[in-house]
Length: 393
Image (tube, rainbow, N blue to C red; front, top):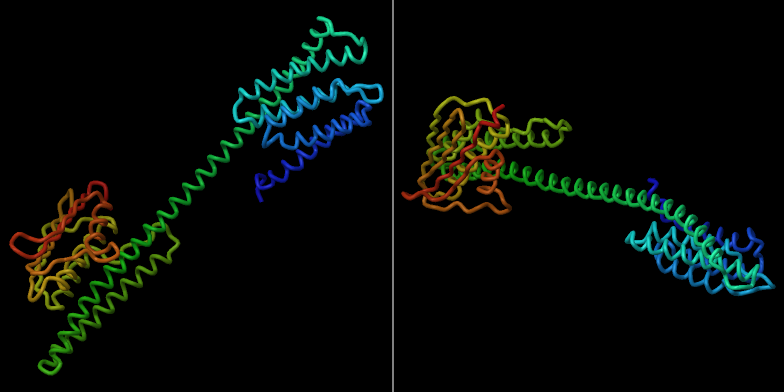
């Protein structure tokens, strides 16, 4: 448990100790163990209990009590001025340390010096000469009060600075912790989005191919058993590929390595995606311009997912008998992906922020450009360009 967690209890104990010390000082140190000292010690101790939370109110209460008790005579003796000075010193210290504005502490110091002067000069007149105090008495009382007050005020000022430093350090630590938690929540949200996007890309493509082949196999079962068996084989192969990708994704998520492979697919597997689409009955041409460069796994995965998602959308939304063309252009400065089809349907954004939105996010992550929309002569077109200046492996 940290030191700061004990502070509320420590503050109560310190306040009780201060109040008790004032009471003991009032009743014992100056031989004031009588009604006046007991009453003053009790009242001042109660006032000082609030010195942290209401320092100005506690100071005013102590000052009023001191002035009220000063002329009272009990059993032939007045209240000792030392009791008044100690009480005022503690109250002034509290104002300097705990008041919201330092100006309040300065005012408390001036007031304490004046009240101390009054207490000292009045004590001399009432207890010894029984006459009005003279100029010498006032000067002596003022010098003693000011000197005494300056020492107490300086100590209180140092304590105030230390207290403010601690408070600022704690605030900075709390702010840093809040920022850390905020960044952690953002990281978790981004990771969830990434996982959902990966699962969507894997499952949506594979299920689309499997559904197309299942429907075709059912239709060809009686008319062309060989085609039906081929459809079943394609369904099995597609399912196995999807299972491998999902396993790779799960293994990556389980890995404790910060640089674990996050690329269950890449540039070399784009051809396999095209072949699966062809096997599902989609006429697809693959045009590759240039040699695949050495790029990071994230860039390769982005290209792979754009092709995969685009062909999946064509299978699902392009209508009957569409054709598609996949163009990959490998340039020194960028990779360009262009997937178009001749379908008659539209490609809505997938629910949950995936599909087209996911492709756009992948490209934007690497500072690229992405657009998707209907072609003027019919069909749909998806284009992405990923610069390589800062992302090459």
